Length: 447
Image 1 (cartoon, helix red, strand yellow):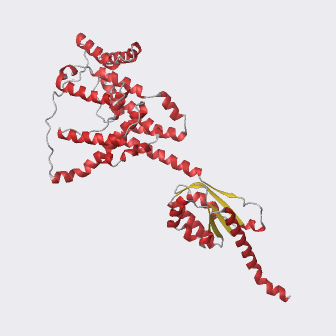
Image 2 (cartoon, rainbow, N blue to C red):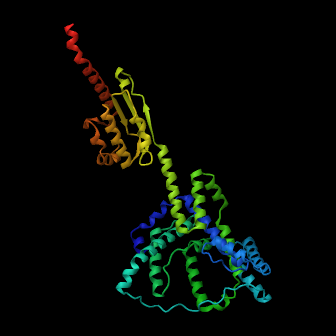
Image 3 (spheres, rainbow, N blue to C red):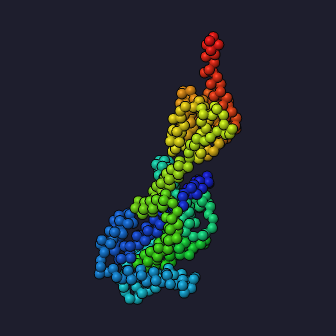
């Protein structure tokens, strides 16, 4: 992770489409909400690792006799969190709600499940073992974990930027920081550090805006471990679930959802697919599938933007023009559209010269260049001369490497000016017509 940050790989997060980010955020909000269902109804979590299935399983084993108190606690927490900021903007509604519910539960002896026993110290730091055999066995798993940690950290930063206006962020610095944190965690026997997407969202929706929020979070956790495990262990789980449910609800921006759904059909599909996969499968898998679906629609739209149009030759018209076909290539000519676009040119008939105008072509890949090459070969085999006009400098390399230029009958069949190309085509038609007439001249003279 540290190496990825040093290599400036954090910029890859900028290639994630907006509908994927919003679908991902919606899915996270649903997961956070569903994960709190067991505590909110006083039931045990389901056996499934999937949040939706686990919530269904916990509801299936619901004890109707004891569900009232947890639900009442969740409702009280929600009311306090909603109305406390209305009394004063700076009132920490979530903290007040937890304290109120905890005090009520302690004084009235309401049967609510508590957090329970917590560790009261951190492990003693120690140097890790550097056994060569162990290191060799851990290389592949470590790279996989590092890749996942990097992706989750970058997604966390991107989601944070989309949820709240926290200002610009440096993705590479984020990776460097997470890498250093993972190294430090290893000395205490801890797990690799990543940016927790759900926790980041909770932090922002609770009012966090700067790095100070993360520092305070770490200090408070450290203080709880050493000074307040007894007090914190008595907090009802229903109170915490209420806080997280309200926070999850606040993560969903109705106006943003409407904006995505009201944009284009393809963006709507990407948004919905990403959200569903996030909830039903996995966070990282959802992003991968979301990007793949977005890429599919982008390529389809790019393919549709391209076209082949037969256009009129420049005036004034000449008698030879009926034997010349001028085609203009527009948009993109790549693997998704090349065959379809050039099929019309390949089937042209009753002409002697075909001019391919490429000055309006925006995208040309190796597949597109190969199809042009095959098209030229096919036309030349039928006796149709092909001229190319206006091939752009950024396309010249791929056209040369794939064989477009070499497939032309002569090197002087490559033009930069349309008038010159048309003039050459007309001359070619005139010469061909003269050549077809000249064999009859001796016979006519004899008569």
